[in-house]
Image 1 (cartoon, protein in one colour):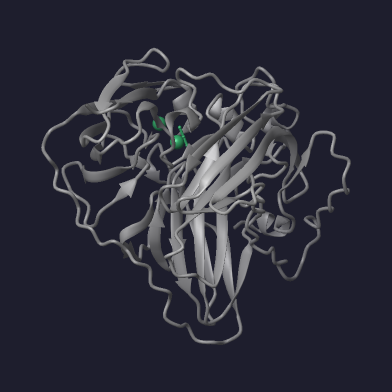
Image 2: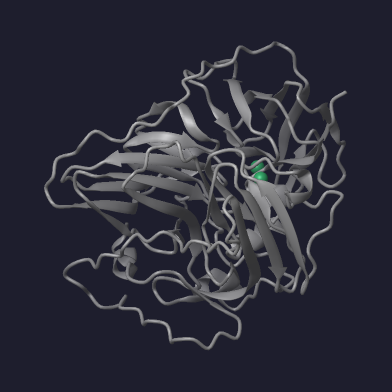
Length: 478
Ligand code: C2O
Ligand code: CU
Ligand code: CU
């Protein structure tokens, strides 16, 4: 990280709800020149408290409201938050639980909440095709069963680019009680912010409810693209440190919640045990890991006395690796000198890569530029609705005809990546968000299960809002 950011690495991103006359915020110690870098503890976002005492049920009231984000250096940005915090409360449930969420809309615009990566009944998905949103001052209750274990997330699905960028997002964890317990865990939510500075135009004075489409932060499109203007925060912190007893293991559940920025993790990444859709079939030990907007990854370290720094390498969706400096995202600092012990073993399924059945059910071409983005030459909402049958496997061929990358995301169904440009992966890859590099052609195997109208879109949210979204209808089988 640059020395400037190092000096700022003191205070968590705080949010204050409108009208909250609480404690004054701590002052920045940022401008003092310190001999030693202060350590910021890597704290997971506060977890949601279950409002339903019954076993097997989890209930939560989620209030979307304006909030003032206080950046680590003390700068303030007007935005939004769920229950007064960004990232929003982490929802932690067990496999099979019934989850009931009441969304209360205290914004001045319509909103919804979408459960990214989960298969829910269509009515609970939060996309607004054929179902309206939740108007200002209103609320809506949805429920679904948590049928897959993994690290998922939630965010609005209306005016999505601006609402996510303003700070509406949180993690939803579905735990499988059969998994081994790891002594230490951190939920790590990455988002890129632009500091309010006079040279950044009206950003500091702008409120998200203004008519201007300029979001309040997160304009960088990936680190390296715009110098050091954009700043990656980890749970609202700059390069925080997780202190973990040596000899123990640490599980990190990482989400890239940025509306458009890519993160390329590097360093001693430990073992990658999971991605978007839970445990990998075969765990990996990658040197680098690209997280497109919406991607999740789980890393497992078995720590000895040696510390770890996880870096973000410069990367742009307009051209992959780019020039620039790497910056420290977060650190792990073992306490004590105990040697590393064997890490907990997860029951990775180890299923083989599926054989491509050879047929193509649907082809989606991703194209466009300059704010106009298309799938199959169409812009949402003027789209042709594809139709497939629940329970029947289909193959989707996704082709990127443009010069920039697009993280392809499907609602309501996970997919297996059969091949990219004709080459099958070396182990089974199951995702809900998959980065399609410029000119790539990927074949995706899907067995939809839930009837309804499901969104298919690019998760660079300005592309999605710029038209790069379509609808796939799943109809009940015969
Ligand atoms: Cu993260 Cu349409 O979703
Ligand atoms: Cu989604
Ligand atoms: Cu895109």
